[in-house]
Structures are given as C-alpha cells and as structure tokens.
Length: 437
Image (tube, rainbow, N blue to C red; front, side, top):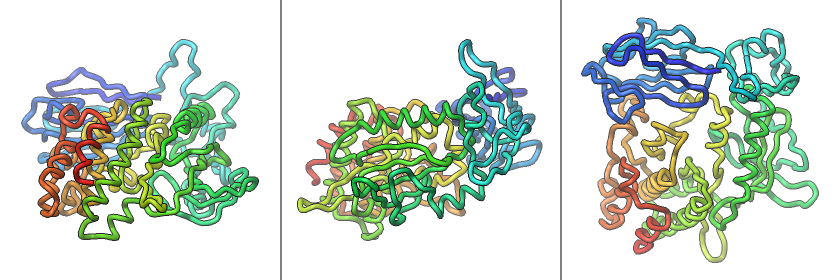
C-alpha cells in the first residue's frame, strides 16, 4: 500500500511523490520544505500532509491564500484517492494504490480485501473492520487470522479497564498520555513492583509488524544507565502491547514545573538537566536517539542523596511510528509534544540525529525554569506546527529576567534552528551547564 501525490499543474507539474510508510510532506516557498515552489501566492510553509498508507491528512499551515481540497478552502482534511489539492498556481492529486512487492518479500496487506471477506475483526468484540483502515506490516501467507485490530469502543474500554497481563497484577493507574496508560503493578511470582505501560495500536496490525516492534524494543531494553528508566520485559496480549519497566516513586518534570509556576530554582533545574544529559550521552554513544524528550517523559526519583532524573519511554515513539502502529500522530494529541520538538524532526522524523535530543532537552529546561513553552501559545488557536517551522523561540530572560546571561546563552545555542550550530553532543552541553548547577 502506498500513497502517491501527483503534481498536475504549476511550476513542478509532472513530478510525483511516493509514500510507502509513515511520513510527513510540506509544500511551500521555503527552501527547507520537501517540495519548494517558487510561487509568491504560496506561504513559506503552506500546507503539510501526513501519510500512513492508506491514511492521509492535509493540514493548512495558516497560509495567507489558503489551501483548497476539491475546490473547498480547508484548514484540515482527511484525503482519499482522487482528491485534488490546490495551492497557489499548483494542483496536486492524491492516489492510493497497492505497491507491487519487492522480490522475495511478502505482499503488502490489502485491508479492503481482508475486511470484505471478514478476515479483519475487532480483537475485543469481533466487529468487522471498515474498508479504509490501515494495516501495519506485511501479511504473511495463511496468517490473516493473526491481524490485530481494536474498534473505537473497545479501545476506549481498554483504556479504562486494562486487559490482564501475564504474570502481573495491576494495582493503580499512574498516568495517561498520548502513547498509552501506565499502571503500578506487581509481578505475581517475585512481588516486584513495576510500572506497566499498556498501548493499543492505532491501526490493524499483522504478526510481522508486532514481531518487528517487540524485537526493536527488546534491543532498546538492553540500555542500562542510572538516568534511564530500566525496561524489564515486553509482550502483547489480546491486542495490547505491554511493557514492564522500573517503577519510579515520584513525579515527572511536568508536575515539578507546575508546582513552581514562577519557575523552578535555577541550580536545581540545571542539575536535573545535567542528569538527563548523562543518560543521553550514554544512549547516543550506543546509537540510540530518544526523539521524544519532554517534561512528561522525565521521571524524578527521590533518594537520600536528593533527586534523580530518569528518562522514560526510550525509543518507544520511534519504533511505534516506524512500524506504522501510530496512525496519524499529528492529528492526535501533539500539543504536549510539538513545543519540545526540533524543527528538523517535523520536516523529516525518519532521520533524526542526537542533536534533536539536545534541542528537546533545552526546551525542557526552559519549561522547568519558566513553566512556559519556548513559543507563546498561538492566538486564536493558531497552529503550533507553523510556529515551530517559522518562528524563533521567545528568549528565556524575557520570561524570567533573573536567569544568568550565560545560562540563557547556553539555552539559546541549543534551540537554534540549524542543528550544526548546537553543541556537538550531550557531553559538551552538560559541560556548558555545569557552572550553573
């Protein structure tokens, strides 16, 4: 399954752009977008398309002259095969098709055919799947009955009433976020307390996709560091992924920031940030990039020596999206993630480098110091994505004048739009912060 965007008219007429996996695509005048077009009727960042075949959604980025789908101006629209997009002088057509498999590879899943024959049903209640669902992963011959899919009703119920996980007893809910629900649980044999994260895939899922995702997470679970939440084991039961992790009896940085609305003490904030960077330094040296550093994903453990920052959900967002299990993420709960996301990750989240984690860490420190995002909230419900792509962060000292000039300089360097202008690695950024701890 793939989505093809054909340029029918305009300066780039005749071009086609093909998407066979989860991706984003931005059109505009800027030279940094995926499809730059010299057309003064276009805004710098005019519209963005998020694709997770066959799903496709368009988002106008607050363009001056607007984006039109089938002759109707729109801010946001789900696209289907045959839809026509107009922006400035250019006209695009969306086409969804089944890509022929490469030699030796299993055929891509045809969700329309499977649903028609009743092969895809809700894991929870048995309801037949609609024709337009996304199937993540290739379908293996004779394994159609292994495709997992949850209808919206069962997804909602599963979020409230967790399914039993082998060998664990859930005790209480610890938190809920865009990636799932976390419970405190006890291992039935050892009595060990753990944090148990449960995630229901947004898409129908083949066994091949499930195996690949769990295999990737198994590799990441080998990462060990005092400032990284330890992963114990993972699996899938009744359509839900589950992950048993180190239980951290404390808040996260989000709660810590909100407990001090006038700003967390500078020295303590920098000390915790240096701990985050210690964990990132180890991970980056081993080839892992987190991709989703934000206050919600940094837990705080309390011990006799003081507070210890621990990075949670390492690699989870990358693997989940990479296998195609996340649906259309930018149409979901992104408000808590975009303010900490580097611009290059929005433009190309498949090839993010460790420098993206440094940007997100600086944005997290900024939030801890000010209890505000690096951007002002868009007036009238404006688009955070456009702000991320086009605007400069608000200087931290304009939010909190008592912050040392040197610290503000370090934060500003990490939040620069060009990755090469940031510190070269986590260790260098930590050294720059040490004088303020």
